[in-house]
Length: 273
Image 1 (cartoon, rainbow, N blue to C red):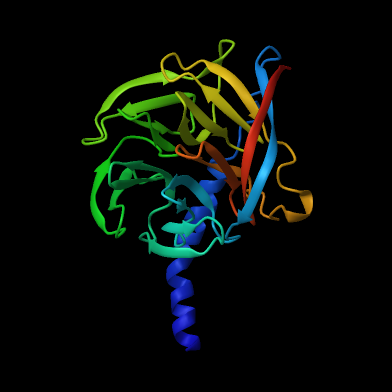
Image 2: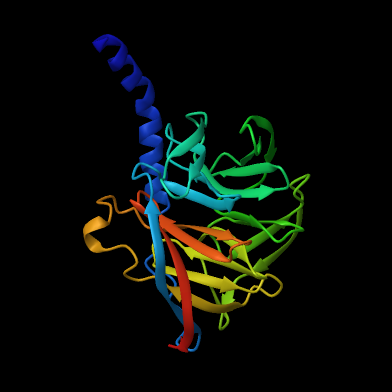
């Protein structure tokens, strides 16, 4: 048993080194984006909170018919899972190949589409069985994924959002996300809500509200203080990341990587900064 465990550790060691090196490459720049003072900012009120797996490195999140569907990352730990909202119980889980780092997630018709970070591969699953159906390829990195009922919308960590054909993954158009003329980079997990794209800005407590046609930032959601300090993960990558929208119930859920809770929130009236 000891020999087998040692052998497994040695086999995984290159993957661990690769994960660490890539995470270092994905650190925020020294000139991390600062929102202009003129952009409206909304605060929030917590309606309810639910359990969340503290081992889940949340990269993509969505809500469908009473369940959360979640994409988790890290090499050798990435999964696609169906989760019961009220209890946090993982009802079904599929592990990705150890060479893949799970990222954004979107539901298109009866298929779940999961991005990967550096591999340039999107995995397409049956919604009900979570069986892998086929894959797509795309250039560049994959970060967040959502759709507007016509096109898939993909973020790659830059200020650019790409609109893709959901059947072929062919790029249709792109928009640059600007706030008062300033590009907004580090766009991460995405959700389409009532005609707007919501985007986590990586390593911040802010979500951008984006016009999908122009790319203009319409406003910000400031989630500072959402997770109490004593509950925050020790890992510096345990940041806000995860937006899910219940269209039928008009409920908004947010969480973070390695967070112990998922929060249902209500947005409060916007104010000028």
